[in-house]
Image (cartoon, rainbow, N blue to C red; front, side, top):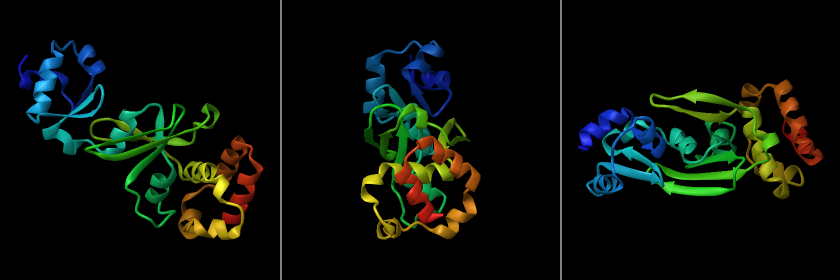
Amino acid sequence: MKYQDFKRAINKPYFSRMDILLNRVDVFGHQLSSWRKKGYLENVKKGLDVFVDEKGKVSPEEISFLLYQPSYLSLEYALCHYGIIPEMVFTKTAVTTKTTRKFSNGFGAFSYRHIQPKLFFGYVTKNTASGTYLLAEPEKALLDYLYFNLGKINDENDVSGLRINTEELEKCIDRTKLDTYLAEFGIRKLERIIRMIV
């Protein structure tokens, strides 16, 4: 099969082994390897490639979702997205019900933290030009972040060291939703920390 025929058959900026099967594309592994060597394809992880000339059509957020599922962007990345923390965040931080993992590729650095299945909630679907990804709501991003840092937070000094922008936090969170989500965690220390913040 010729490269252009393959690209037309896939008809999107990236593809997985499943896309090849679903589109009934007759392509061999050595052809894919050859196209990678020629710079036509970029391997993002085993079983997932991007067409190099269409790389700009795919967002790192979408790649985050494609790399490791189920997962949703949360923690520092989501807090920065909502303006709740002042630091720029370059790693796409997410939570997953699978094992904690890290990836690095041409789209950047990606970090996934394991969370219990019962706490895998509180996210929205974001649509992109070529797919989707999941993003934590501000309330859940804050709770996820505090949950994974419970061991480092013991008093008001530690809370203030988190540099949370309380003005932005007040603008974007729903108190009722925050309390509902907080109850699902069932951790008294987390409840005490939240009361110091909001």
